[in-house]
Image (cartoon, rainbow, N blue to C red):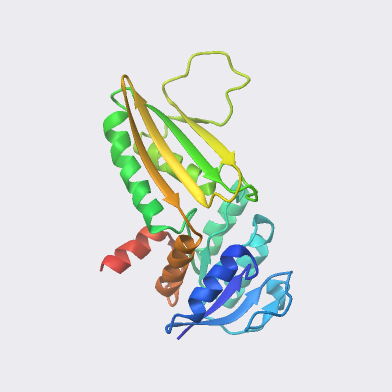
Length: 255
């Protein structure tokens, strides 16, 4: 039985994942961490991770960037593997993630969806073929009106996936309102839409002369991210220190 601490247990994703863990015979909810708690959870909830005194095998984090530093310190201190799903981390925080991974297993992904992680691989192949042929590259992401960060971590991951394939020669552009000039060839435009209850949609657009290739992914419920996080926790529990990603989980599933 793998015992899980859910960091951000009363958020929307925290509740989705808690429900999945309750129905999984391989997993058990050990505790939750959340400053907001009305006592409805069937497991102990602590307002701050520093107060948690419950033994566990893995932590799943779906919280906010402001509390990630304390969470990483806790995981390092307790040698607790961590599935880090929170987005919007600063460069300084990403450096702390890498530092923590020297002492404990950390799996970080901008998006836990299997489909998105496949898309990350597909856009690399498309970039290999289409960018040298002069195709412009644009990324459009859409999310609900409660999402705090923009662009999404997934949109940036898609941009990075393309850019790495192209020798990191492309510049990211988020706003063209102050520029009156032709579009440079080596740029990736990234646009964000916020509205309604959109769970998450991402389009990677390769626009060439007289033709457009669009690779898309749409999530219709938060369950797709929860399933990925749960699978990642099963993979990570007991793993040695290191920085892992969803590619490792996919390879493990495929055998």
